[in-house]
Image (cartoon, rainbow, N blue to C red; front, side):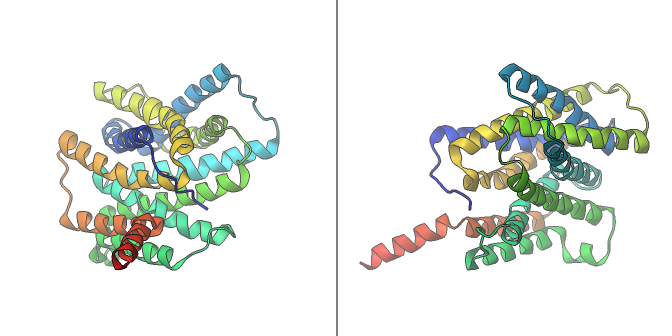
Length: 308
């Protein structure tokens, strides 16, 4: 089950930094898409990040496994945690704003609760979790809008693509727990990105042709940020924060990413979100708070103390 220990000030600072970094990835995608198609945007991201992380693995002297079973697990993890979700988000961002994509991406935590309950015997679907899941999916429905679901267009398809990415992330979390538990986190990240590179580079060549050098100066900066900071660096920071704050507290990142992405999109791209996006995000946030349970427990404890 998710651990829910208290968060030290340093862990809060690094958790916030991680949210800021991943919030910037949505802006970077939007910038790169002006110069590249979605397939090469993802392929270059995972290729460069994989090279950086393998350099880190070599520098730390981490032993590299040789079993085919482990590399097969890396390949599937790369498909579920990188190739599918990165592609769906990047394709979706051709049709929706970066801020809206980041809000829908927060549904990952809701899917994660459902997948864990289906796959693991120690992850029971409690009443609180059921209420939280219901609130979360209600928020996603409000964000997309019932009219968009009735009349499918590119904008609604983009939103559904990001929800598909959230589901893929949740499946990746379950897969990692079942197959990669014995691997060093940094090695697992390098192996996963290698798997996604083996998938994405041929796919990009097939669908979009040979890659070219960036033609816009801002593309260089956005691509460097996306691969080096928001992927390779973020994975290293992720496992550091995981050790300090615990897996339960890392769920907060899915909420914290969205405000940063919305702010960056508004400043850099002049994006304006519809009011329903904020209302849906509020429902989604409420759902994750209910799933987490700590706020509700504190309220119950305070109520009991007041009665005494």
